[in-house]
Every structure is written in C-alpha cells, then in structure tokens.
Image (cartoon, rainbow, N blue to C red; front, side):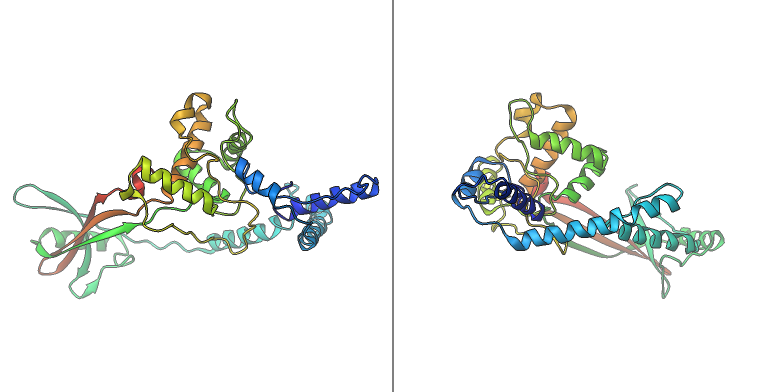
Length: 344
C-alpha cells in the first residue's frame, strides 16, 4: 500500500522482488492496493480492489531515476567545482536555472522609460468627492506613455484645473466572481505566503504536521505534496450536503463546480489538499492546535468549503465626466451577494 504514483509503484515492485529473492512467497499471493487519502472509507475500498503491479509505472520510475542520476550524479561534481557557490545540477533545477537566468538577462537589458500619471478628485456643489482618471485629451487617447515628463504632466494638470465637468454617461452592470478550486501544493504555498506570511518551507512543515496528525485527532488533511486540485466525487457530495445544511441552499452552486488542472502534466496519484473530515470545523479543534497549525488548517478548510459554493455578485458602476477638452472615468463596485466570499 505505497503512494499511488510511479515511485510508490516501484517501491512495491522492489518489495516483491526482495520477497522472491528471499524465497518468502511460499505460495502466497501479493497484491497492490492504493488510496489517495488516509480516510477509513478510502482504505476499505482499496482493500476490496487489489490489483497486480503496473509494470509501465515501474518502468517510468526507473527512467526518471536514470535521468536523476545522469543529470545529477554525473554533472553535479563538475558544477560544484566550477561555480562560485558550489551549485549542484539536476533534471529539474538545471532547466529552471536556465529560465531564471534568461529572465535575469531581460531585466539587465531593460531600458527604463519615464512616464507620468494624473489622478483627479472631482467635487460637486454639495461637496461630494469622486476619484477619476483622464481618458481622452480632445481626440487623443491618454495612454501609459502619453505624459513623458514632468513638464507635460504639469501642463495637462493646469488645463484640467481650468475645466468644468458634467456627468456624460453612467453604466451599471453585475459582475460575478467564481469560487476558487481546492488547493494543490503550489496553490497552497502561494496562498499561505500572501495571506499568512508563511514561507514555502514553513507551510510544508506545518502541513506535514497536520497530515501526520496532531494529538489524538489523527490526520487532519490529505497528502499535501500534490499537483492536483481535484476532489473525489464522494467527497464533493459530502461537502455539498454540508454547505446546504450549514450555510444554506442559496449559497450552494446549482451544479457541481468542476475545476480543470492548470498544470499540463499532473501526477494523478493524489487528490487536492483538503480536510480528511469535512465536518471538522477549525473552531472545534482550535484548542488542540498550535497557532500556525490552526491558521493553515483554517485556510485549507475554508478554501475547500468555498469551492462548491455560488459565485459572489457585485454591482459595478462606471461614470464618465465630460468637459470641453477632456473625458474622465470613475468606477467602483458594491457587494450585492456574498456567495463563496461568506466563507473564503
């Protein structure tokens, strides 16, 4: 019962080969079982669906191991001798380093170009204030490099101050924002960094603790080093039932929200990073977790929960103001229906 990926398959194959060499089979039948998360029902289903070892997956793992050894073991001693910092080489890190160095070269060759922006506060007779941006100067569109220096900006500023503006057009429209998919590992690292200020290393350390289990709670989340943002159908059904009861049917999406994999080559061995028990709310177990464990579990639980909720709806208003020589634009939005934002 190893990981459901090519490395797990190769370990299972090795174990079987060792048992053959040691003559431990003695008529016994060895079968391979796999599960994507440590949940009771998943493990029982796996036991009821044993299979033989997949030789194609084993060969794939052997090929990957060869590439690791060829690019890593053979080339690393050379790069360590010939680089200032003693950097190693590898199947993944070497192509990545090339991409980074190309981007760095683009930065070095970049030629800065000066431009100025004008922001306008319009005030009506009642003292109401609205923030605007200029769109048109006569027949000319005011784009990013329209004002190339301070002198040009000051000239346009002075001209705008001499104008009187009136409302030209008002547009209103509803804008929907769809919920996000459950976390893959890369999405989790990004969100934990922006929302919690966690480094990728710290996020993975805390996620490992949650996966291994805290105190007597057992494993709290599924395997976190996953490329996938997909949930099992059975888990989605459970989640939808919970949303309907806890938050209300008006917050449950009409149909199952299906998310596409963003990465082109995704190892489907694991499912998305989600709580192992969806009804285990963060507040229930807060006292059993450290501060960082609670923060990360709360983030994962909310993201998972929100993934099957309705879109949020906001009312966007755009107002155009016109004078003899200029056209200005102001826009803003107000929430109309929270949708998934009620949770996440």
